[in-house]
Length: 151
Image 1: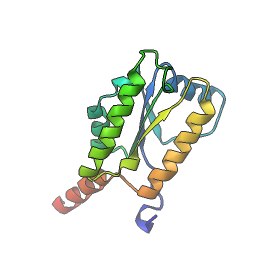
Image 2: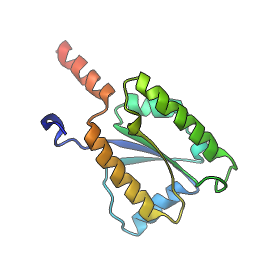
Image 3: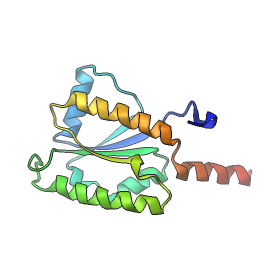
Image 4: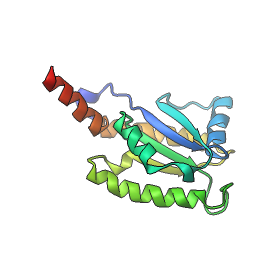
């Protein structure tokens, strides 16, 4: 990590499925499982309802990483195929992120059930460490540099 970003604390937006992943996050909280406070949770009814535009908007607005978490494959989705829809969308979006100058590792898709509070906490810890290594969102860095030039 460069000296310039040694105190960098990433901001991570998490889109969590109401039925599984959000409940897993809630379990982590009530079980007092420790994980970094870098995450901001957005509760969605299904991971399949997370539009790629929401993810791009999160990056555009300064998120350093985005987590999408849903019910386990193949058959835990309460809406039958929402998790498969999320898998297809995220796979395609990761390919597109490279074209936008964003490392695909900044976007992560996980399957976390309501009983996996420990897994939720572990995923958040891993993601925070990975994003710290990558540094700030390149879009945010470019925007900051643009403002400095205009001053």
